[in-house]
Image 1 (spheres, rainbow, N blue to C red):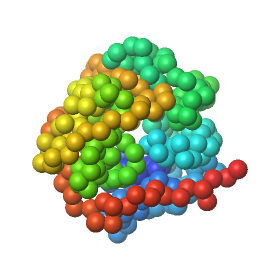
Image 2 (image 1 turned 90 degrees about the vertical axis):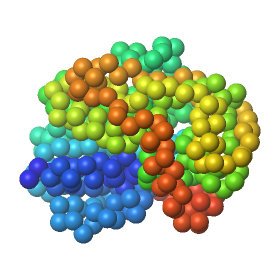
Image 3 (image 1 turned 45 degrees about the vertical axis):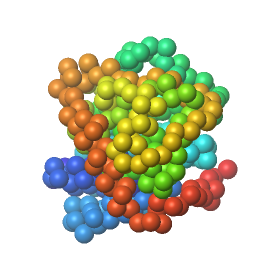
Amino acid sequence: MKRILITGAAGFLGSHLCDKFINEGFYVIGMDNLITGDLKNIAHLFPNENFEFHNHDVTRFVHVSGKLDYILHFASPASPIDYLKIPIQTLKVGALGTHNLLGLAKEKKSRILIASTSEIYGDPLVHPQTEDYYGNVNTIGPRGVYDEAKRFQESITMAYNRFHGLETRIVRIFNTYGPRMRLNDGRVIPAFMGQALRGEDLTVFGDGSQTRSFCYVDDQVDGIYRLLFSDYDLPVNIGNPNEISILDFAKEIIKLTDSDQKIIFKPLPKDDPLQRQPNIDLAKKILNWKPKVDREEGMKKTYQYFKELPQEELYKREHKDFTKHIKR
């Protein structure tokens, strides 16, 4: 039985990856320090004899007993609310955490896939974004802690690939959504869903003309799975190229939730990207991959998940206190 380590296992995307690899017959070792992850996302896996969980911070030395065939490094805060609250920890997991896991992969002779992000493109001057675009990033802006952590992550991964001959893969993840997202994590979809379910007006930043392209989690997981087992070691965009303005998306949410909320406008946050759309020609060519779930279908599934959350989740306004986790 092949063994795989998945970091960030209790997070939104990490937990779905755990499900995927369990279903594909792997022995899965999940690892998470639970700063932003939640054990309820993987609680259904605990009785499974082919799953084990380690509560561990990957910025510290990582040890796994026995053979290890694959590593997926998905440990990182991923929403602006999180990485603005814990900027040092965000940088450390991208730098020290990645270094530790690359070292583990080298020791175990494992293939490792690193989760990068469309945020490495910054506020892009090229549209749609292709893998050969180097980006337009403010290194010292508030979002730089996430953007630069991911850019460094890519650099050190390719250094290990070229210097040590390590088998590496890099996925650049564009906006992904679906069940198990945290309702109050500040990202567009859970923010809109939470406001709609509470009967609040929907908040749009700027004039709403900025665009995003949303990929359903099942499609994202399929793309990542295919990339891991491909022979391609340079970054690959995985996302849905169906682009929509934030204002039009807010109107879609109001229609989906059958509510009569208004849309209110607030100032655009600093360095917030004005356009985000993946060019997925490379993924189509080398992975034979493209998204299958359209936004209408995916949003219905996601809305149903949020509707079934306990009321205390819906009305919980305070975000986690991360200060106890920060090592100065």
